[in-house]
Image (cartoon, rainbow, N blue to C red):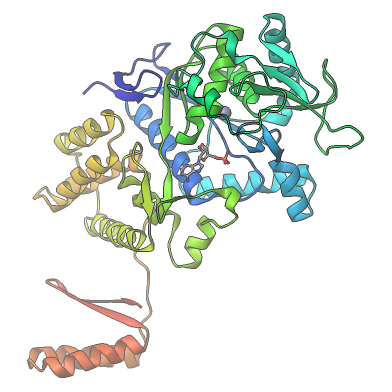
Length: 457
Ligand code: AMP
Ligand code: ZN
């Protein structure tokens, strides 16, 4: 099946063709490194990893660029409030630079734990100040900027189709503008460069043709993507929250300066929610991979959970759904382990699996194909080869999985034997009592057709 993706810009599923044969450039908006990534953020990076793996499975060479926002992202995406990095620095007592370094490493570690393929290139906003200044100067030359007392702003009214990506209702926004517009001429204008406050030294500030200060949040992505992928590249990704402001403004800048809409495809991962509330880093209360592991869940359990929902639907997190994901993944690992050596791949199953993914990354449907294959009458060696081939895209690290080696003390072993005897005597009451006693010693028994298995409680 031809590869197809939903393009937010055109609001439809379209056939995917790379701009240059065999190669695909992807730019994904990276984290703002003022705190740990929460599992909602990580869902977006898992979606991007899935996209990359599916492109690779289709034979493309992928150049995946991810930025690190280490300056300029204010507490409100609409250019008001304080810089998240300076606030993080006050919260932790680290300098803004140390803070960025600490949380960048923590983020990269999270990606590794989730088996997300390392991007081909990381780029930091603070390493590209000159490129951002050049971009703003070009916009200034072309008449798209104006100055206020606190910065240089983009004049969004100069573009006919500003807001097309988000289908923004500009008139409605203007009428209902409750946000503090400050000196901005229009509610949709945004900062390109912000001046440092007078008589106050910021930790992160640079000289520019307009005065000392720091770049706005959106310009880093237009400048860095142009540098590493060109003025028009294949796919730009991010979370759904980027559609109305961040990506809308990236497109405005690039359209004004380079005359392109930046990327051929715009793809967005939908949010992870908790109890129907958005999971926000800024709210302070959020779930991290570390917290999941404190509760006994591995990063792979979370990866599997994310595979059970389509990237274009919001997913509501619950501990119960994570438990189900863990149980399913365990069954999958154990099955694959039990099949032993791998033989020939089932081309029919692999094709159905790939067809689901080529159809706008339908991983839940592809997973259903995997389970159908597990339950099928294919030979074990075929199943093993097929699941390993599917795992190139699922990324569950199936081949590395080993059953947990458990040492069962003799005292427990004796109870297990006594229970076996009780079961063959059909003395179910005694068998149940023994099972409970074994449980109180920290071991769980599971009776299956193949016999009784024992694992740690
Ligand atoms: P940030 O570090 O806040 O700049 O966000 C990093 C990435 O996570 C961006 O692509 C956001 O769109 C995405 N994101 C933020 N919150 C969520 C969420 N609750 N679920 C999924 N993705 C999210
Ligand atoms: Zn961006």
